[in-house]
Length: 463
Image (cartoon, rainbow, N blue to C red; front, side, top):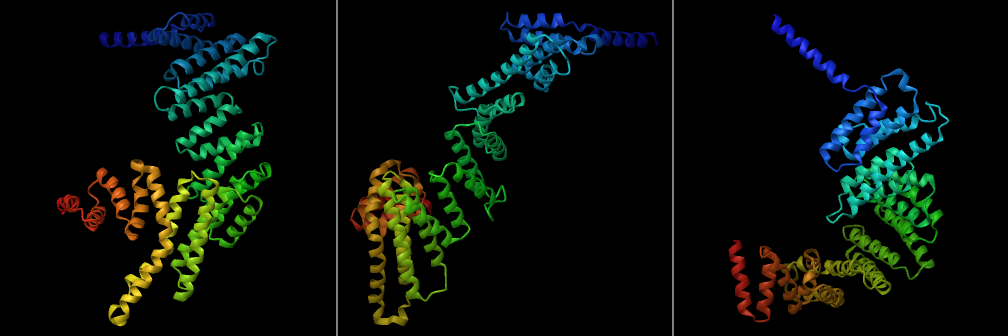
C-alpha cells in the first residue's frame, strides 16, 4: 500500500513540477526570443521557443499580467516566431499571434505609441515572412512547389486579408492546384476592392471567366453560363477594346447551340475588327461545328445536304485561312483546317463506300469514280497544308497531329509523305496495327519490297 501511495505522490509531484517550471515571466520569455538570434541550431531554437511559449502561456493566467501591454506584445512575438520556425509546436500559432497583437491599443488601452507600432510591425513582418516563403516555393531551383506556396499565401492572408499581392498570386497558385473555388474567391475580393492596375484587373477577369467557362460542370454553369456572362459584361464595360471577352461570349453562344446569335456576334465583331485572327478562328470553328451538326441531320434530301455542307465547310476553311493570314504561327488553326478539308470530303467517300453494286450494275464503276473524284477535289488543297505542317514540325510532330494528317496523304496517294509521317509514329511505337498496314501498303505502292517485308514482320509479331 505504501508503495502505491509513494507512486501516486511522485506522479502528482511531477505534474506540479512540470507546471511550476514556468512562472509566467515576460522577461524570461523575451530573453528566450533574444537567444534565438544567437543560434542556428534547430534543436536549441525549438527548446527556446517551447520555453518562451511556456512563459507567455503562464503569464496570461496571472490576473495582473493580463492588463499589461508588454504581456501581449511579447506573446505576439513568441507565437509569430513559432509560426515561422516551428509551427508544429502550436497549430494555432498564427491566430494566437494575431490575437495578441490586435489587443494592443484596443482591448488593452495604452498611450505607449511604440508598443502599438511594434505590434503593427510584428504583424507586417509575419505577413512578409509568408509572402517571401511563397515566392521561394515558386522560384526555387526545383519545380515550383505550388502546394507550399498556396499554404504560405493563405497564411499571409490570415494576417493581412486585403493584401493584394497575396490575393493575386494566391489566386494564380490556387488555379495551378485546381482549387478553382478558392481562386475565384481571391479574384472576387480583388474585383470588389478595385485597387489593381488595368493589366492585373484584366488578368483576374479573364482568369475568372476562363475558370467558370472551362469548368462549367463543376460550377453548374453548362446550362446557362450565367457567372461567365456576368463577368464578361462587367469586363466589357471596363475593357471595351479587349477582344477576349466577345470571343468567349461567342464560344458560349456556340456551346448553347445559339448558332444565329453566335454568327451575329462574330460578324459584328469582324465588322469592327476585320484583321482580328481570333475572331476569324472563332468564325471558322462555328461553321465547322455547324457542318458536323448538319452531317448528322436528316432534315434535307441528299442533294440539298451535300450542297449545304459544301458551303458551310468551305466557309470554315476560308475563315481558317484568314486566321493564318493574320496569325501565321497559329498551328491549331492549321490543324483544324485540315479537319475541315477532311470533313468536307467525307460525305462523298461515305456515299461511295455504301454504293449498291448489284443495283447499279454496269454504272457502278462510273458512280464510284465520280464520288471519289468529288471527295478528292475537296481534300486535295489540304494536302499542301498537311505537307507544310509536317515540314514545320518534323520529328517533333505529335501522335495526335499524325492522326490528323496521315489520312490526307493516304487518300491523295502521296506515298512519300505518308511513309515519312507514319515512320515517325512507328519508330516511337510499333504496335499500332492500322499504321503498320497503311505503311506496308505505301512501301508496296512504291515497290520498296524490302521495307514492306520489314513492316510485315512487325505485323506478324502483333498477331
